[in-house]
Image (cartoon, rainbow, N blue to C red; front, side, top):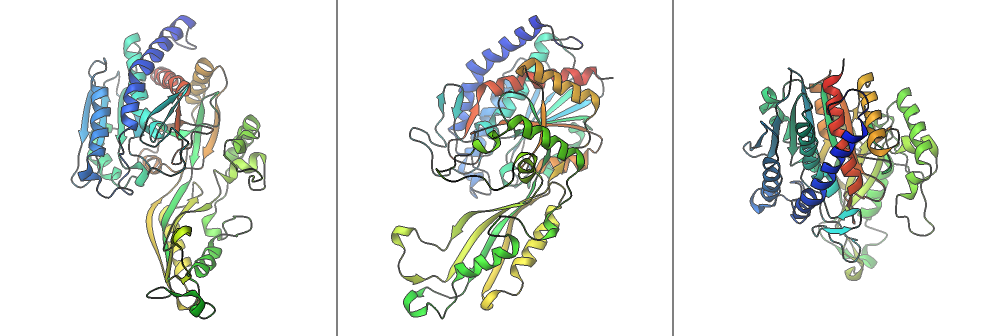
Amino acid sequence: MGYGGRMPEHALLATRDHIETVWEDEIVPALERYIAIPNESPIFDPDWATAGHMDAAVALVSQWCRERAIPGMTVDVIRLAGRTPVIWIEVPGTGDDAVLLYGHLDKQPEMEGWDEGLAPFRPVRRGDRLYGRGGADDGYAAFASVLALECLARAGVPHARCGILIEAGEESGSPDLPATVAHLAGRIGQPSLVICLDSGCGNYDQLWGTTSLRGMVTGELAVEVLTEGVHSGDAGGVVPSSFRILRQLLSRLEDEDSGRILPRELHAAIPEDRARQAETAAAVLGDALCERFPFVPGAGPLPGGGAERVLHRTWRPALEITGIDGVPPVQTAGNVLRPRTAAKLSLRLPPTVDGVAATTFVKTLLEADPPQGARVRFTPEARASGWNAPPMERWLEAAVGAASEDWFDAPAVFMGEGGTIPFMAMLGDRFPKAQFLITGVLGPGSNAHGPNEFLHLPTARRLTGCVAQILRDHAQRG
């Protein structure tokens, strides 16, 4: 590397060869060991501090990074009392400028439904795909970030001082991160560029930049009508069903026919530039936006196509019930009118809706005037505001476009994402003058959080090269 403008082909090939070799010989084996560690996020594993899985993942990733040939690099594990650990990697650079790169190494729970031969904590390589929980979401991020900087060091290419922050609580809403960032404030500095590798891509054919992220409210909605279960033949028609009352309460929030979230307080105006980006993304993706999901025969997507479908999953609220308590399995269900039904709600919020205010609103909405005097409680579990990226400066837009052309042979595409990265909203508030590149490898079929999650290895390798090139262009801007 080390060239202004587009990279000469010989330099591109040399960098690509190194990336290919390191990924195949060193990163994939390390990721296989990482996938085998059941380091579920603290919200899913309350005993994480004593179980040792998180410590094992931190030790694996930090040791791999320490062994890389990058002059002056330091790798520290930050452990604040009672909080999840953070890996902080610092690579010196030229000048006073700084870049912050971000990823996480905690995982979602196992989830049922993995195909034969696959399992959440069993790494399986099938062609270009590395299956297992956490490889794509986003255990690869630390390895890719460090390798990108190693490529620059090998080529003698200047770059700004870079800090890489790998947290262990993102899937729990990053509750420990504000304290850790405050602790590291002097070392983080005031970055002019933030690169996050925890997002998605619409396809595996080009570089995708995430321009917005939805917020989230999760919690348990519990309905109790009895102190114990009773014979359904005796009580049916007299005692109200806790399940029916729960359905009534959910209808305050969601239209059951269309899935539309009803309260206007949970909606937001869609900016014109995001609507235009949605049109471009829809034209690139076509039907692939729906075909990526494993519908059963006869089932299909909700109404609305094109840009509207993109906006439905990026700028409009949506509800899913991700868990049920108080309901026995079908095989052991007797003729009992159950005393209690509880559901875990996962409500996605538009990027500009405040997560704290939305949580208060949802709790008030669901608990007010309980039907038939039932005992109703909504207990919030996690909440996060979304994020809408600041306008992209010309140098970054050009750098992202050039990187996509050089590494994917296709133009870059920008689109919002439907998921949540709590860290981004916090960083946006903390560093209002910074530019942001949010990207990732979670493309069609990769199925983060679900069964058969996989990392698309060619995309991860190309993205590594893109990060290196954008760090170079950042140092050369202006």
